[in-house]
Length: 226
Length: 222
Picture 1: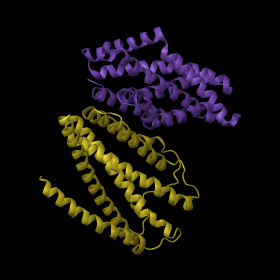
Picture 2: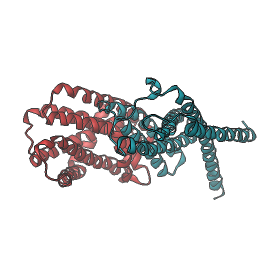
Picture 3: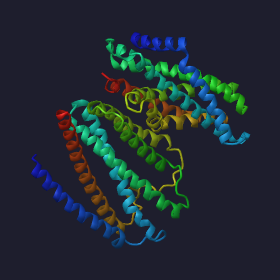
Picture 4: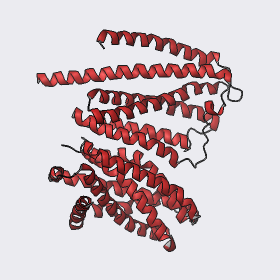
């Protein structure tokens, strides 16, 4: 795939992203009906839940590309792993900010150590640790290998955290889509937001991936001059 | 099996001759108990479940100290290079080191626990076998992840400073279950409820010991 094609694809994705975000804002803030008991507060749901789903998707990409890197030793997989970890931390950051904002008026507390909250926080910390490790290894090849190992550990840890605390009573609302708790009138807004977040993920991943490739290329050229 | 034993024996011998890490681990563990006692104020009988948390915090902190020493000492005198030249599978190296780390931790846990009995006036003599089982499972899980991450940490610019930062989020499942199981025993609750935390800890240990065994070669410097 040549550069021209890639940059055109980026432009097209950018336009879709802009339209998607405008549509998401409109659907979530204006189109979707006001919730009966929580009022406008409920609208944070349209950003909180898609951000969580998108963050998990990013961590899954990190896991797969970490495994692929160890199998194939191709630098591209490492770039993808790094990009996805960073993007995932960003999305989970959004989840952890919007969550307490909603919880304070709804539960009267910012935070509670419920299974969902705890496992989300641990996941965030694990991938923050992943970024930290990368920061402190200079040799790119070693950094890639070590980070891949930690990426695998982090992703397998997440389900065990969730299982470990499952006997705790959970204050967090149960998954709305599976239990049918989300009114049909609210669904379109949710799906538009989810789609917009997915485009954002793909867009950010692509940009971050190319940036990382270019950074490494520049680094190699620099080394050749020196 | 014999190779694992050789690595294990080497680490044990070095430690028994120098007693570098064990002394530090013991002392730090006891200090943590004292600090927590003041941090939480005077304890009543009803606060038994907090003792389980304090105990595992002391185990985890002193364990981290031991895990750090394990690879730092190897790097200091080029021993790691020698170990890497030995024609054994890297996974064997990992298992030997993990077992050695577990033995050091268990040894210091025994002393820390005795101090804990004295400091917090526990009467648990009948429960010692159950507690030993929980300590053993928890410690194996802790060192399964800890050995892998310790090898990662010593090869970074931050060295041993990095280990607690990456280790504690990763071993949280072990700590949660170990505290839960210990609290069940200290509160003299039904032993049947020990099954769940013990199962989770065993699964965790098996999963991460396998990962460490498979992936250890990738984190060592070559």
